[in-house]
Length: 337
Image (cartoon, rainbow, N blue to C red; front, top):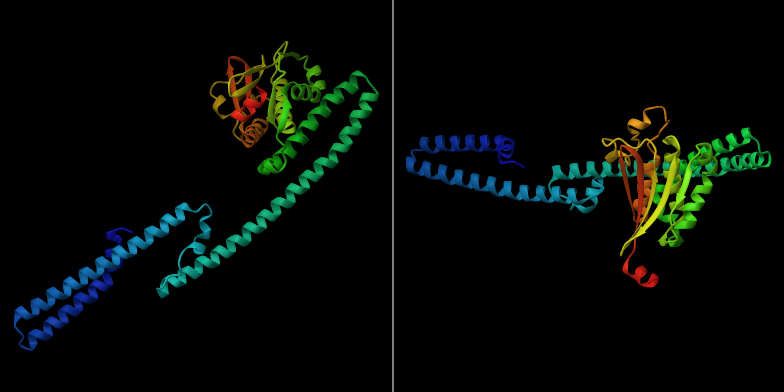
């Protein structure tokens, strides 16, 4: 609250006091009182008025600043009426009641939105689980009737399965901590499982797989890391070049293990690199007919943050390297040592 605005608000009070002082001065002069007496009363009245205005200004400013600080510290600022004291002034009590009604309305609306989101999430999860049944049946039919056509169908089924998995993990990513189970995982097993999930797409694109010695164990959730690897492999297939190669390697330092997935594809433009983990960002490559949604890498980043895994991307001219960085605390290092 500024002093200028406060004086502007108190202008009626100041004018009434000045009018009262003028009337009293005229009455005293008309009653043959000495001019010194009139001036003295005028001065005392003015001092009392100024002091009262100043005292009220500082007390109100302190109270309002306290409210502002309380509001800034709140994450849900509509809950301010729950922590503020009930005001004593009648006009402030009216505004307090208005804030309480607004808070109640907001809580009811939030509850309704949360209920709708929960129901929608449950529906998506149920739909995905149901649609996986015909996908699995079609895979079995194709695998039991091998032909060039069935191999093409199997590759497209892997694409469909990836999109359904993406939708499922997106629905669950908000509360990922309720779904994952952290335990000791062999990176080699996870990498081979992810490759198996994409075997027909990899074969269709003639992708060569190179795997260095990755017999390394980390503590994480195997299912979520497998999904992250599927997204990375899917991007490598989508943006592959001639004679594509996908290279997996793991390096170990004192307190971390880095799993790097490198390809020799078209790469990522330098201007796009800082934004590839943003939701919905497709970049220059995604606008060239690749049907990119900008969700895959965003989900990878979101899930890595939930699991405490570092995620980085490097690309220069050709090829891209995505690295998963698994942190090792002192206790795990001691056990493995």
